[in-house]
Amino acid sequence: MPKDLHENVCAEEIFSKIYSKYSKDLYNFLYYKYGESLGPNDKMQDAFIKLLDNCKNVTPAKAKGFLFSVAKNMMLNEIKHQKVVLRHREIKPKEYTNESPEFIIEQKQFLSKYQTALARLTEDQRVAFLLNKVEGKKHAEIAEMLGVTKKAVENRIYTAYKKLKSEIEGFK
Image (cartoon, rainbow, N blue to C red):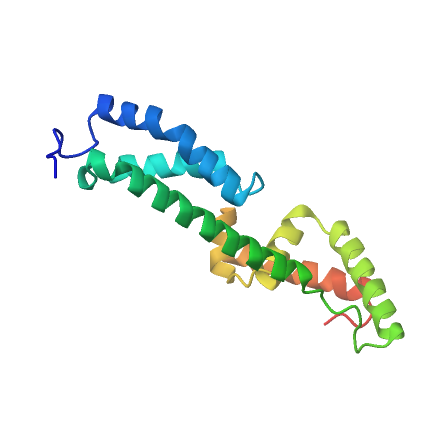
Protein backbone atom coordinates (compact mmCIF):
# COMPACT_ATOMS: atom_id res chain seq x y z
CA MET A 1 0.00 0.00 0.00
CA PRO A 2 1.52 3.35 -1.02
CA LYS A 3 2.22 5.81 1.76
CA ASP A 4 0.47 9.20 1.57
CA LEU A 5 2.72 12.20 1.21
CA HIS A 6 0.34 14.21 3.37
CA GLU A 7 -1.27 13.10 6.59
CA ASN A 8 -4.46 15.12 6.15
CA VAL A 9 -6.33 17.46 3.80
CA CYS A 10 -6.02 20.63 5.89
CA ALA A 11 -3.49 22.31 3.61
CA GLU A 12 -5.21 24.77 1.28
CA GLU A 13 -3.61 23.45 -1.92
CA ILE A 14 -4.53 19.83 -1.08
CA PHE A 15 -8.11 20.78 -0.22
CA SER A 16 -8.38 22.81 -3.44
CA LYS A 17 -7.15 19.89 -5.51
CA ILE A 18 -9.63 17.55 -3.85
CA TYR A 19 -12.42 20.05 -4.46
CA SER A 20 -11.47 20.44 -8.11
CA LYS A 21 -11.17 16.71 -8.59
CA TYR A 22 -14.34 15.50 -6.84
CA SER A 23 -16.88 18.34 -6.74
CA LYS A 24 -18.33 17.73 -10.21
CA ASP A 25 -18.48 13.95 -9.69
CA LEU A 26 -20.09 14.33 -6.28
CA TYR A 27 -22.69 16.75 -7.64
CA ASN A 28 -23.50 14.45 -10.55
CA PHE A 29 -23.79 11.44 -8.23
CA LEU A 30 -26.23 13.27 -5.97
CA TYR A 31 -28.19 14.75 -8.87
CA TYR A 32 -28.62 11.48 -10.74
CA LYS A 33 -29.35 9.40 -7.66
CA TYR A 34 -31.69 11.76 -5.77
CA GLY A 35 -32.81 14.43 -8.25
CA GLU A 36 -32.81 18.21 -8.21
CA SER A 37 -35.57 18.71 -5.64
CA LEU A 38 -33.38 17.81 -2.65
CA GLY A 39 -30.66 20.34 -3.46
CA PRO A 40 -27.67 18.30 -4.62
CA ASN A 41 -25.49 21.38 -5.02
CA ASP A 42 -26.11 22.42 -1.40
CA LYS A 43 -25.40 18.91 -0.13
CA MET A 44 -22.20 18.77 -2.17
CA GLN A 45 -21.07 22.08 -0.66
CA ASP A 46 -22.03 20.90 2.83
CA ALA A 47 -20.03 17.70 2.35
CA PHE A 48 -16.92 19.74 1.54
CA ILE A 49 -17.55 21.90 4.60
CA LYS A 50 -17.69 18.73 6.73
CA LEU A 51 -14.46 17.60 5.10
CA LEU A 52 -12.88 20.91 6.04
CA ASP A 53 -14.21 20.59 9.60
CA ASN A 54 -12.72 17.09 9.88
CA CYS A 55 -9.63 17.73 7.75
CA LYS A 56 -7.21 16.55 10.44
CA ASN A 57 -8.84 13.11 10.54
CA VAL A 58 -9.08 12.51 6.78
CA THR A 59 -6.15 11.58 4.57
CA PRO A 60 -6.16 12.56 0.89
CA ALA A 61 -6.63 8.89 -0.08
CA LYS A 62 -9.79 8.65 2.05
CA ALA A 63 -11.23 12.05 1.05
CA LYS A 64 -13.35 10.75 -1.83
CA GLY A 65 -14.97 8.05 0.28
CA PHE A 66 -15.56 10.51 3.10
CA LEU A 67 -17.19 13.05 0.78
CA PHE A 68 -19.48 10.55 -0.92
CA SER A 69 -20.53 8.95 2.39
CA VAL A 70 -21.26 12.27 4.05
CA ALA A 71 -23.19 13.61 1.05
CA LYS A 72 -25.23 10.40 0.73
CA ASN A 73 -26.10 10.51 4.44
CA MET A 74 -27.16 14.15 4.14
CA MET A 75 -29.45 13.27 1.25
CA LEU A 76 -30.96 10.37 3.19
CA ASN A 77 -31.56 12.66 6.16
CA GLU A 78 -33.22 15.18 3.85
CA ILE A 79 -35.48 12.45 2.45
CA LYS A 80 -36.49 11.47 6.00
CA HIS A 81 -37.19 15.11 6.79
CA GLN A 82 -39.33 15.51 3.66
CA LYS A 83 -41.34 12.43 4.65
CA VAL A 84 -42.05 13.95 8.07
CA VAL A 85 -43.06 17.25 6.46
CA LEU A 86 -45.37 15.41 4.07
CA ARG A 87 -46.91 13.40 6.90
CA HIS A 88 -47.66 16.56 8.87
CA ARG A 89 -49.10 18.23 5.81
CA GLU A 90 -51.56 15.35 5.43
CA ILE A 91 -52.89 15.74 8.99
CA LYS A 92 -55.85 18.05 8.74
CA PRO A 93 -57.23 19.84 11.76
CA LYS A 94 -60.78 18.95 12.62
CA GLU A 95 -63.27 21.21 10.90
CA TYR A 96 -65.98 20.90 13.50
CA THR A 97 -66.46 21.88 17.11
CA ASN A 98 -68.71 20.70 19.88
CA GLU A 99 -69.92 24.24 20.58
CA SER A 100 -73.32 25.38 19.46
CA PRO A 101 -73.56 28.04 16.74
CA GLU A 102 -75.09 30.42 19.28
CA PHE A 103 -72.09 30.02 21.57
CA ILE A 104 -69.67 30.70 18.71
CA ILE A 105 -71.59 33.85 17.71
CA GLU A 106 -71.70 35.07 21.33
CA GLN A 107 -67.99 34.41 21.66
CA LYS A 108 -67.21 36.47 18.55
CA GLN A 109 -69.47 39.30 19.71
CA PHE A 110 -67.86 39.33 23.15
CA LEU A 111 -64.38 39.39 21.60
CA SER A 112 -65.37 42.30 19.39
CA LYS A 113 -66.79 44.25 22.37
CA TYR A 114 -63.68 43.44 24.41
CA GLN A 115 -61.32 44.69 21.70
CA THR A 116 -63.34 47.88 21.27
CA ALA A 117 -63.36 48.50 25.03
CA LEU A 118 -59.60 47.87 25.24
CA ALA A 119 -59.05 50.39 22.45
CA ARG A 120 -60.96 53.02 24.46
CA LEU A 121 -58.64 52.69 27.46
CA THR A 122 -55.72 55.05 27.80
CA GLU A 123 -52.42 53.59 26.69
CA ASP A 124 -51.11 53.45 30.26
CA GLN A 125 -54.20 51.62 31.47
CA ARG A 126 -54.21 49.19 28.56
CA VAL A 127 -50.51 48.34 28.90
CA ALA A 128 -50.71 47.77 32.65
CA PHE A 129 -53.96 45.76 32.36
CA LEU A 130 -52.70 43.50 29.56
CA LEU A 131 -49.33 42.94 31.20
CA ASN A 132 -51.12 41.85 34.36
CA LYS A 133 -54.05 39.86 32.99
CA VAL A 134 -52.64 38.45 29.74
CA GLU A 135 -48.94 38.12 30.50
CA GLY A 136 -49.47 37.28 34.17
CA LYS A 137 -46.94 39.82 35.43
CA LYS A 138 -47.05 40.96 39.06
CA HIS A 139 -47.67 44.60 39.93
CA ALA A 140 -44.09 45.08 41.07
CA GLU A 141 -42.73 43.68 37.79
CA ILE A 142 -44.96 45.96 35.75
CA ALA A 143 -43.94 48.96 37.84
CA GLU A 144 -40.29 48.17 37.22
CA MET A 145 -40.86 47.70 33.48
CA LEU A 146 -42.80 50.94 33.09
CA GLY A 147 -40.69 52.97 35.49
CA VAL A 148 -43.58 53.94 37.77
CA THR A 149 -44.60 53.09 41.32
CA LYS A 150 -46.47 49.95 42.28
CA LYS A 151 -49.42 52.11 43.42
CA ALA A 152 -49.60 53.74 39.97
CA VAL A 153 -49.76 50.30 38.34
CA GLU A 154 -52.48 49.16 40.75
CA ASN A 155 -54.48 52.31 40.00
CA ARG A 156 -54.14 51.84 36.21
CA ILE A 157 -55.25 48.20 36.38
CA TYR A 158 -58.16 49.05 38.70
CA THR A 159 -59.44 51.90 36.49
CA ALA A 160 -59.03 49.79 33.35
CA TYR A 161 -60.96 46.95 34.95
CA LYS A 162 -63.68 49.36 36.10
CA LYS A 163 -64.08 50.82 32.58
CA LEU A 164 -64.16 47.39 30.94
CA LYS A 165 -66.76 46.18 33.43
CA SER A 166 -68.99 49.18 32.73
CA GLU A 167 -68.74 48.80 28.93
CA ILE A 168 -69.10 45.02 28.66
CA GLU A 169 -71.95 43.23 30.37
CA GLY A 170 -70.88 40.00 32.01
CA PHE A 171 -67.20 41.02 32.19
CA LYS A 172 -65.45 39.45 35.17
